[in-house]
Length: 76
Image (cartoon, rainbow, N blue to C red):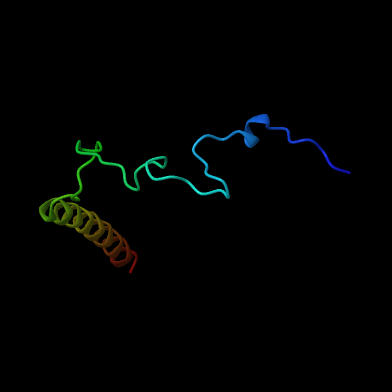
């Protein structure tokens, strides 16, 4: 059983040569050219910013440790 092609434009594509080849100039360029910035910086946060968060986290962990060590010592 053979069904008809549901897309009538499939038989009438522009730009195709006999045998299915495509002539030069019919295809889009291989790469897009974007000269404007894409909405985000390419570099990450500065090292000082990372070290500041690391220091803040370290101080919080140290405070928790001191609290629990003081609680344990008070039990004995």
